[in-house]
Image 1 (cartoon, rainbow over the protein chains, first blue to last red):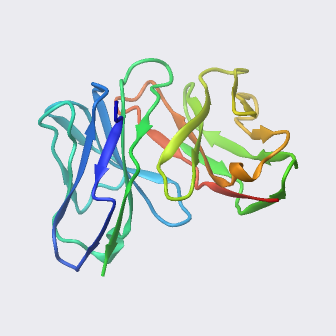
Image 2 (image 1 turned 45 degrees about the vertical axis):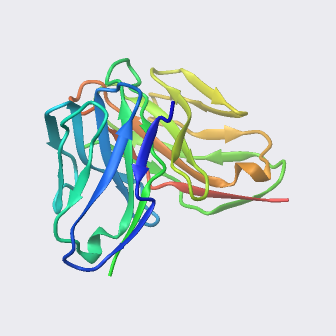
Length: 114
Length: 114
């Protein structure tokens, strides 16, 4: 049981390049989330999904896109990378049920845009 | 909107000292409250949680009590170890929102010296 896996672990992009951050979970969770963590800050929600085929914006969606074609996968796409997108990106998943809705996090992707 | 405020770091302690990291929140309704820990180079792990007023969450010697009257969820440990050195995040989740995402504080870095 791998939990939540993310690839790549590190990436350096040039301004204007595009890339996709991959996220996969094997817990059959309906809810999946993408957060970004800027230095010295807490995590902020980029996008989330409550099930396959359903996605919605979080607090900071500009410059990103997502898709959810399967329960397991929730890729995050950066179309035109900008220095402001330099951050650590975390994917998380949860059942979406229960009072606490505990979220399980992947190890993160550290992205630098130069 | 919802928000979480936690004390600025870094907090530097000697081994076996007592730890308190303050956390207060603003949210409508009755959120669930969490402490997550992030060890160097890793993703976030759930440390403890509480889902209703006066609940006490505990794990690995850490404790936090959900205080609705003071909207607080302070993290405490009686005797810290070097291995407790990490960044600690306070967070909340509301069950009455569709996204059920976490709202995080900015994190507090704890450094424990031998």
